[in-house]
Length: 406
Image (cartoon, rainbow, N blue to C red; front, side, top):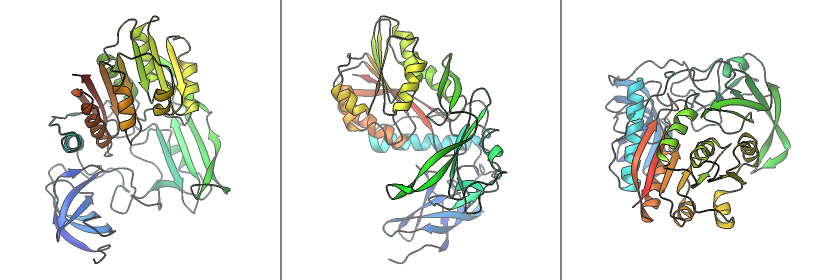
């Protein structure tokens, strides 16, 4: 088969697909097209062709634009530019409709469910929301973001989705070529940043280890959510949208069904955001088991929840703790797994303890749908779902699903 890389041709753009692109067809092959919208006619340039039934491309010219198309506010959100944003060329309502279509399609295809999905807007609009980000440094010492599916660094002076105090405070300095930068602005408005320098003498998976060197702020940040103040590692996990933690905690609390004296589990607990909500519901006579694989996050969680003795915190892989630890049978399980999802082993371990409810917080709709299908095999049905636009301008979306034992 001839390699199509660099080839250009006209296509009719079809439906949105998971991953920030739309589907088109050319000469019997599927083309995943970025920078396009459903219903448009565009000139696509193939950017990646590994053979087989599909390839990838960018819409380099729009012949028939969608009425929802807008001018991207960022000059590098274009073909060949920054790979961070997927939908800057779509209006806000259209971005949310596209994400809703993806969630619904994944549930239909992977879980066999027809579900009407609405993606809800958070406060603050489409720009200047991202409080945590990671940048790369090019060979000239300039900060930037990587191009789509590439290691190439696209230099930037600012970022339209980044909160003030993140990219803007780092962009006008010269950094070590090949380094990376982690930056966060916490709830107090303080900036914390580290330069991660390549340690070429040490390798991990064939790549140099990045050794952190703090350049701004401190090693600990302050966040506020669920009516509590949190102190955690500056670059540990926390929701990047300033309203996301509160919104998700509120939905978890509403759907958990946990009551005074109950036992509840918080799996992939991070620093214990949802565990704190569950602890308030079960009270001092109840028990909350929180499991987190990152030892640093688990230690931060233990410090933050020290006033809630009904919480038991375990540092370890969720599947290992569920298999080895003597845990009380839960009435409710809350889980917030990484992008790959919980997986069959964890689903089976949860179902074996027969909780009444599972509240699943998901950052990837495909992983959510796969796990919903696995739960269905064990008698748990999806009864409620809410989706939130916690990552405007990108293809990412956060869902909360309620599964109840039939």
